[in-house]
Amino acid sequence: MLAVVDVGNTNIVLAIHDGSSWKHIWRVFADQKKTGDEYYAIFRSLLEGDNVDPSAVDRVIISSVVPNLTLSLLKNANRLFGCDAMLVRHDMKTGLIRSSIPSELGMDLLCNMAYAHHFRPDDTVMTVDFGTALTFSTADASGEVKGVAIVPGLLTSVNALFGSTAQLPQVELRLPSTSLGRNSEDSIRAGIMYGYAGLVSRIIECTEAELGVHLYVMATGGLCKTISPLITRIDHIDKRHTLEGLRLLADLNFQ
Image (cartoon, rainbow, N blue to C red):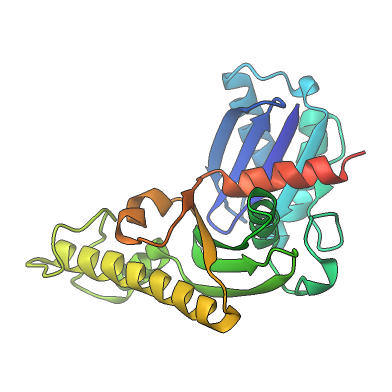
């Protein structure tokens, strides 16, 4: 079996794939103050709670955008599963043109673009990832990485608004019933949801105009299904897109 670990700024996702489907997916808060032993205890408890035999895992791959947690997760993978984990790197096999991969490209975006290109090899594909940051990563049909756009994520914006104002409340993000809010919650919900829907549509339009092609747009991330009814240009939604990218990279690089 394959274990994949996606280390993000907000959450760490551990998932188990048995060769045909995802059997388990766990999500824990990414806390840089936790020790390696604490993370080991957390992950060990999750595996035991779902009766997963760690010795059945023979491959582990990790994508991390949090350098302070990377070494800890690598060591814990060996402790948990008894095998060395593969760390996602720019120089590994991805199906993309290696020379086109920017040196600062995040590992999560590399996973996203690798899977998008694999999923739609004949199209120029944009992956829109609704995470801590809202990211737009694009690769063309040849596997060339065209570029990335990044803005604060929806929850990041809501939290910043809540933390920086005295009277505005914390708001649950869901589809707004109106663009003309009559109370604080409805007003914030209308501004964030309609505003971000317009932002996503505009970046898609600008990218298509610059490249001169029609994009196939894939969406992932925690809020992709929540906001997608407001965005007509999304062609495919998969909350496991990044995990599928990790699985693809494992298949391409493990001997």
